[in-house]
Length: 290
Ligand code: GDP
Image (cartoon, rainbow, N blue to C red; front, side, top):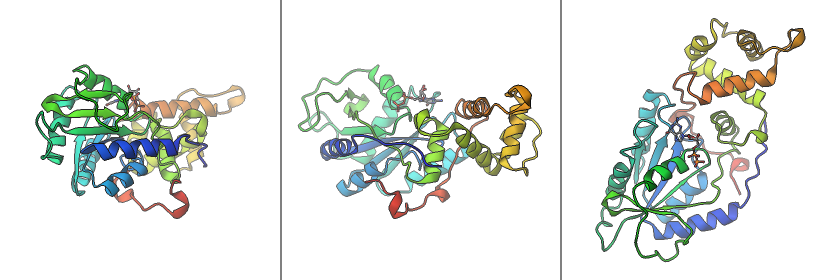
């Protein structure tokens, strides 16, 4: 499946991120805990390494992710040089401001105090929950500090406990859709606009992935299924079970696909993680974004 996704303003976004990154001490990237590799923006990682900035990776939506694999990913991120990690979900956002500030201080211990406040930037591809987190953090207070040279005035600026200044970076961070399996996972998680992919195709991918990684979740949700059957038969069986049929006994493919995707995204299928650190691979040359 080719995902029809043409992110605009890539160059402008890259320039803005690079400029802001030069002025900050820590780069915070929010990723989706269900797909921490696929939801990483490759440009952020490249710029960060080039600029030698430490990173805090926030694995958000952990309430929807497999707790065992969240721990595996957490340890994996922490094992990377200059990287700290934080698991966030709907249940523990209250403590986020303090934890983020503490972890940033660990990453840049030389920048603390009123004289030299620690500055961090926060980024993430669409739908990882950046606005939700920023709204939550902004309930505290908007920083009343002098402008930082080079940081656009329009950027939202929040002061966290401990004095850390957090800069939001508006602008589109494109997801890793060039790598086919990442594109499917992003589509399944809802991180790509629905016009850009075929929902039936992605629902088939969901069934295949669940058969391989979480077979019990399929059985618990849709009843007894013969998981050795081909994916189209499983799709039809789910349609029948859930009454997604058209006249003449035909499967309502669109309705069935929407049902499966909604079940995944809402957590009705259970807490599911679509990839592990073992799934990480170097992109092929044609998969690297321009
Ligand atoms: P943004 O595009 O990164 O700014 O993402 P939003 O903040 O708009 O969030 C996208 C969707 O994810 C919204 O429906 C949020 O309610 C939901 N969301 C954000 N954070 C969490 C979380 O920790 N857990 C769950 N389950 N949903 C979340």
